[in-house]
Image 1: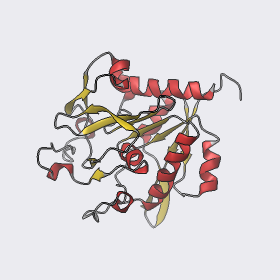
Image 2: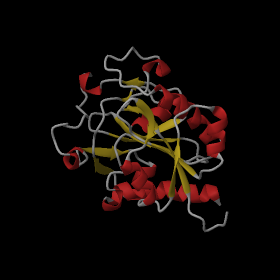
Image 3: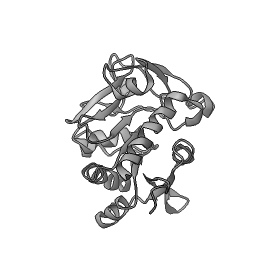
Image 4: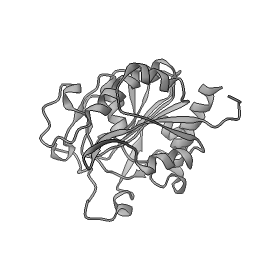
Amino acid sequence: MSDCAPLVIGLVADCKIIGPHPFHALGDKYIRGITEGMNAIPLLIPAMGEPHLLETYLGMIDGLLLTGSPSNIEPHHYQGEAALEPIHDPERDATTLPLISMAIEADIPLLGICRGFQEINVALGGTLHQRVQELPGYMDHREDPEQPVEVQYGPAHDMVFEVGSLLAAINGTDRAEVNSIHQQGIDCLATGLQVEARAPDGLIEAFRMSRADRFVLGVQWHPEWKVTENPFYQSIFTAFKSACEVRKA
């Protein structure tokens, strides 16, 4: 492969039933985040959880993007209580949770969005709140399903960057406005991760890996949404792209 070849970014698919059949599916906005926000090539990784396939895919990619999803991580993966509203994807869990550690070991840059943000935390030993809106002192971080999608993905709340954070450095500011489309959130942050940003209620909105030799960034909101129209969101994909280029070189 020549030095000018485009980056290849892996995305783990959801496994969902459409009609009577299981499908491996990806949201269009994540693919556009890669093609438009990074000028890179997306590569779908099926949610099959087979180690030899995961190793093969890791050998084909320059970066790994873990997307959001309507499904939640099964709580037994972080010793959580059985979910009352189980919208789960065990095939994806069986794929992403081992793949995260494999990607970190292989020094493949990793960006986690929403469910992907939570997956990184769980894979590294952290825990989750299943219903943030029911906890005293926390905001309701869910979108309004009655609103059009443009409103659902519009600015929802302010977010403050931690001093010395990557997000503060790449934006030159101490805060930003983000969308909010989730009900789960981080309870205990995994060892080896450090907080990048918090919502006004204190909920962790972003983290990165403490190791300086690894690019692992997780965000709870959706920066892939119309990424090229939002300078803050674009800066996240630009930083991810830069890490992928360094790793490829």
